[in-house]
Length: 442
Ligand SMILES: Nc1ncnc2c1ncn2[C@@H]1O[C@H](COP(=O)(O)OP(=O)(O)OP(=O)(O)O)[C@@H](O)[C@H]1O
Image (tube, rainbow, N blue to C red; front, top):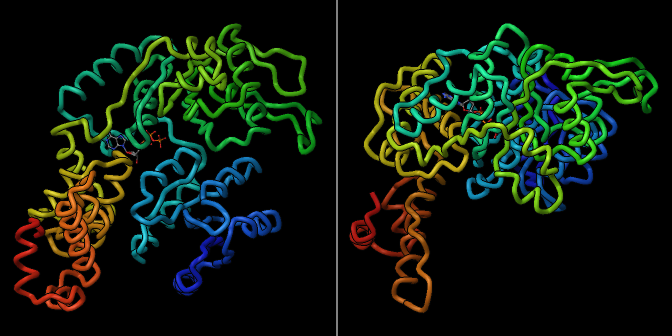
């Protein structure tokens, strides 16, 4: 049983969720806005948070930031409408463990809750790379990527891994470590996006008893935990200026100083960092130190977005189907033509993470051996079908675009029942068919 805090302003939906979670043995609590979530978080502890992205007095990202500031270590799942997926992907950078798109599918929700609770109980992250779960890809982009990894892995150079969210930066960092001379020593991953500003220095460098309120004992930092091995700093752009200064010193002098201590401790740690932008804007704005940047950037590895990986996309689709079949005890062997078409044409803003989630959901919802369109999120279908809106004053083009969108939305609403769709649209079936043909709606 898990104590789950639901932060959701839709009353009906939150009650539905509450009932559903209770039925599955969990203990849910509901609040409807950001303000009250802060109150309850100050009073009680939870195993998991389900947070709506759009709330009446803010967004789920504010809840995430608050949790980080307060140093809570709760897994957070963001619930979002499909149209907000791009923004919700950001929530992952701020420390959310996953996101789920609305309308929420109950089986998918249980699967995500199970996964989130499992991750919570994992003691530390595993240092090894489980090869069966990962593939490299066969495109020229992939060849270049792994040539760079092979080249720099055995050295002690600091590496910056740059790529959009979900492109596999952490996996690349683990591979670098596994192929280095440090592989027998620890790989310690820290998500700087999830570190509270106040506690970041203590987390990295440790502290001595009495260094600040709450420091009741001496504590070793992650630098010492990674001694001899590799420290992976994910979302390094989120470190505060003060911590950046300390980090630079650790890199230059190879010593650290725990918070509140005058003692210097020698460290031997290789630093790998990850970022989703090139940090140059942050340097220009004075948010990231240029000297630190050069120190970290002895070598840069660029991870391509999934949409730029050409044929690899198909390999990843097959790979994730295989993994999900095993995990969920399913036997999906084929994709219907429209499903394949959709998966190959979608632009995957959440990259490998989004693909993995979509495929897992698809496999979960496919008891037979062929996955059909109904196993993909409706809104994904809509995102693909929506042609770019015509601009300017071409009234005919604008009307046609609106008409097409309305027809697709209605078809989705009635689960592709054309008689119902025609009725709702107030046209006869024949007219609907001819419009569908004209607008190439399958
Ligand atoms: N080469 C790969 N083969 C199979 N799965 C992969 C591969 N690379 C990444 N993944 C999967 O994709 C998901 C995202 O990977 P990862 O966490 O490494 O991305 P990231 O770029 O670090 O994300 P973020 O920017 O959000 O921190 C994970 O579930 C991971 O297991």
